[in-house]
Length: 173
Image 1 (cartoon, rainbow, N blue to C red):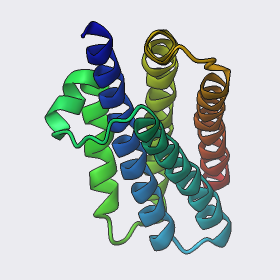
Image 2 (cartoon, helix red, strand yellow):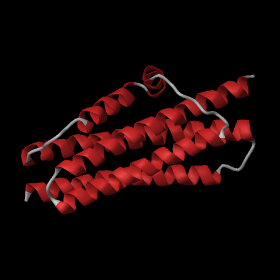
Image 3 (spheres, rainbow, N blue to C red):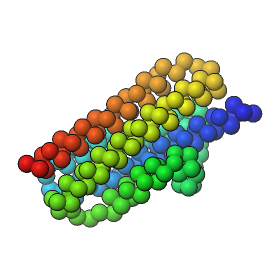
Image 4 (cartoon, rainbow, N blue to C red):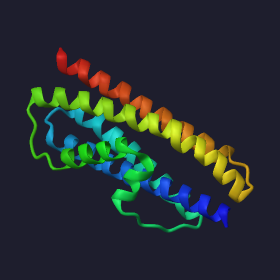
């Protein structure tokens, strides 16, 4: 019975990660759609598409664990902690933006850098460690493929931070 509980907890954590990545992807896509610079739009769209791929991977993991779940965002905030709520609130605000001026864009990029750092840090500390421990125990399978993909997602999040630093540098010139 305890193993089933661990599996459900892990599925919940993965589901919440999927929701977070979907919201972040939509935020980036919205910001990309309202700026006038083609290069900046392309860079933000790149991050948006990566985030959408991450969301799809996490959904696939939930299905692989045989858990189709829907959670209240409050439950996700409990599982992930305050950073999850902060990221979700910021992503929701960014999705609602309908225009942006150059000064606001520069400030926004700084906020997005922090957001990417929080997401990467959360995946590294919470998801990665729990995934390895719990799935290995519950599924009795070789997890190298999941571990590798999670490492790639963490690399993507770090790359997103570097892209945002590049954008910030472009905006200051």
